[in-house]
Image 1 (cartoon, rainbow, N blue to C red):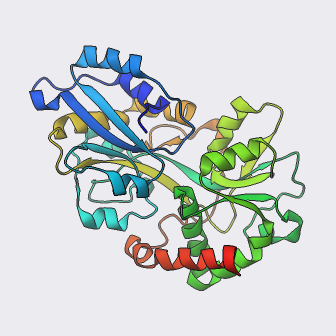
Image 2 (cartoon, rainbow, N blue to C red):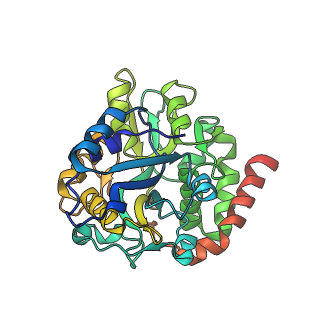
Length: 335
């Protein structure tokens, strides 16, 4: 399915002109993007204006998740991948189908959000994971992973499936980082009865939360900003367990076989510019990676003593993730 999300409306409207030495072959920039937010459908008119002003066209293929992207992607045609993340990054780094980008704005990225020191994966935005809940429906709000296992939360949590959702994968890895390779299974057994439904992705979880099917989801903490505009009658807040936080970091990368490397670098450098990064929270409901842009005041950055994002080595995750997911499936569906 091809369409153009709000993210790219800003990109198209504000992107700087490519350098004049771009050759004729640089007239088309092909992007493969993962759908990670609620998105709008049709920005063809904006694309036409962009093409007229800057002399080359952006083609975007949108995929529901990275698995579908990698199974379908034509590496000889795609110039940029958007939506790469820090969840299962080891194979991406090892396969070396991306090149290191030379970006003057890379130096402004917060160091704790750089998860690939080779600079082939360029962080663009992120959000901490959190338990998001309807304050009117939950009393005695839990503050720890332990408290959320209490029976009073039976069938109150909407969970995303790690087999189909990048956030689902992140939640599973978060639990391993918090409890260890044996303890995470005890956590999921303890919380199993509190799961109302396991859904395919963040959009479905979010929609069911708004529909009041259940009062809690686990997802992007920055999602609360979206609920403020859509549901004024419900009061959604969040908590990050005191055991530790986990950031989902979304990145972009330039394909090694791209014939438009210079144009791709100009585009990624713009995505890291202060002008564009300032729009990320209001337009994407995510958080800027730049260290010189203040954390959104409405998010009230929660002080958590431990950041579990980088606790597990990428190689260790890559080698063990399939086993963790298999055991999770057995607990949640088979036991």
